[in-house]
Amino acid sequence: GKLLFVNVPSSELKILDYFGITSAQLPTMVLADLGSEGGIKKYPFAGPHDSASVTAFGNSFLAGDLKPSLKSEEVSPEDTAGDVVVLKGKSFADLVLNNDKDVLVEFYAPWCGHCKKLAPTWDSLGAEMKSNPNIVIAKMDSTANEVDVPGLNVKGFPTLYFFKGNDKANPVKYEEGRELDDFVAFLKKNAHNPIAHEEL
Picture (cartoon, rainbow, N blue to C red):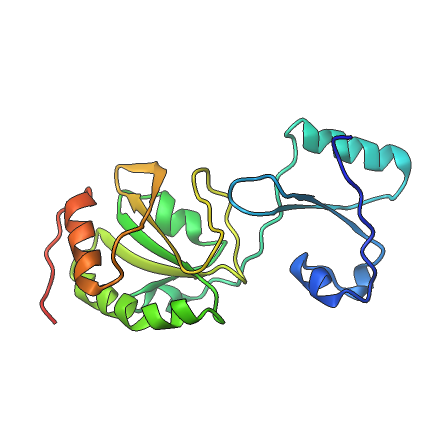
């Protein structure tokens, strides 16, 4: 009883889309880890679909030997051209983790009303912080991109996390005010790197 097998009819197109499965790939199997802290982790099974292979795949998962499959949009030069850096699954580690910059990230969904309401303030924050090369204001469309980062737990939108320049292993969930002054005050108080901000 460590794994539960569920048959999903091919007519359930939203579920197929969520798991990144096309009708041409059927029949197929994906192991979904619903118990992970950062959301559902997906492990596609390459086959063959026989008892021994499926059992071996399940045992590899239980032993922690599998890596999840993560969605990502393609990276483009425009992602880092604006005041707010656009993160993709494939660029997240380089732009957020593998440096000593302080990074404040909005994880959003394009359809989310609260995210749309925050957008002008987030853009203003990016503009205000642009003169600070070691302070990054970023956003990631979490419906099209996924990351597997310990300590990151995105369950609703928008979710905001701060990655301190000298402590990337311990992201901090931002739960303070959502006005421009609130974000600036938070960064001044918590950033590892010095901040000079421009009055807009």
